Length: 193
Image (cartoon, rainbow, N blue to C red; front, side, top):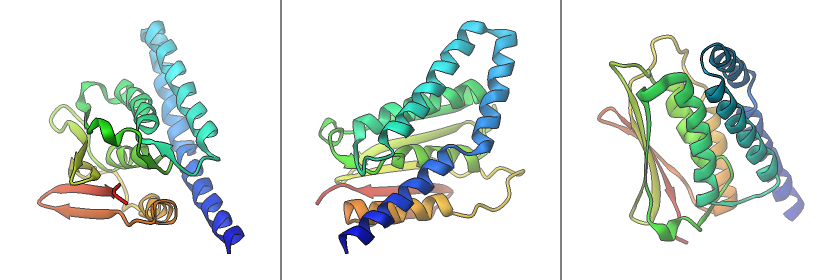
């Protein structure tokens, strides 16, 4: 039974890793980098360092079943730096977590995947800036954003969210709650045992 559980955990982590290493993400990153080298070499250098830091985190934490919220937030910040380079001031991240939550453990790529989902599925422009909020409420972490679906994006497969639900249930023995009400998309990650 333990071997079967370990195998399932490894497969779910591999799926999360594959989504992070997606060709689409690399393609957009390389295009952004190419553009930066023509405009601002210092910013291009910062972009390269942040991209390298992001992949280092993914590769180092791949084997870890759980990481601290603090470690995950550092990764989210690096990811958001990359996305802000692409979207400018129209992408914002608001983090308001209680300090006692920062040492709590979550599966790697949990918060990043939720932020990435918001970026992937919502319009980000001067008229529709995107703010992703990560905050603590009632012993849970909430990640939410106002829904402004992109007009050019095909219907999502929800594979990333399903993978997260399975990993969270397997590793934390708790269920995440996904809610879409009044134009707000929200995911609740319970942390209390």
